[in-house]
Amino acid sequence: MINIAIDGPSGAGKSTAAKAIAKRLNILYLDTGAMYRALALKAVRLGVDPNDKAAVEEFLPNVQVDVVYQDGTMQIYLDGEEVSGYIREHHISKGASDISKIPAVRLKLVELQRAIACKNDVVLDGRDITSFVLPDAKYKFYLTAAPEVRARRRYLELLAKGQDVQYERILADVIDRDYNDSHRDFAPLVQTPDSVYIDSSDKSIDEVVELILSYIK
Ligand code: DC
Image (cartoon, rainbow, N blue to C red; front, side):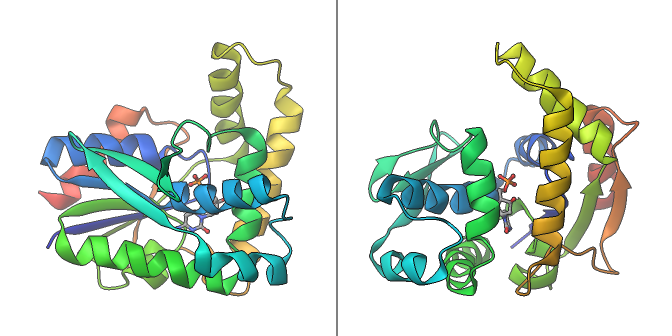
């Protein structure tokens, strides 16, 4: 199986690049962040604080997260309901970052990620794919960009959606989530020595895609 692992902080362009690469190579794309987002959504719906380890561990055995591919596009299901449309909201991003600190949450989702990766050619993006989920993946990348650049991209994206947002607030959230994701005890975001480092600050998505493909061909 060909596994292509891409880690990096939020807003570096991982998912856009990974989707394009999967399309070019005609293989699957697995957005592992969507799985953490689905569990954050579950916590919010139950009125559970995603930081409350005991309460999360209590509902965890009874929650079902599934990844389904329809015409090659990944869809995420929570307890049998397709929730791709609900998991991109701002409060879910923070909730996903918080809930992902809980080891039992990670172990549950990592099992599913490994099961998909061992049966399929797949591009996965996340925070711990190169270090923990698939340390032996054939192709490993660390994609990042300056926090200001990532915050500006997100700001423009939200403005285009007609949302009333402040750049400074988004930058503060980006920095906060970076800290959270890279300072947790279990499987934090790290750049492994064998990953190709790519800074997308001055690159278009097309340039990033071509660069990654040049290592794979
Ligand atoms: O990639 P994303 O922004 O959708 O991810 C949301 C959160 O999920 C992120 O802040 C941290 C967590 N996450 C993780 O801990 N490990 C992964 N492999 C993917 C995401």
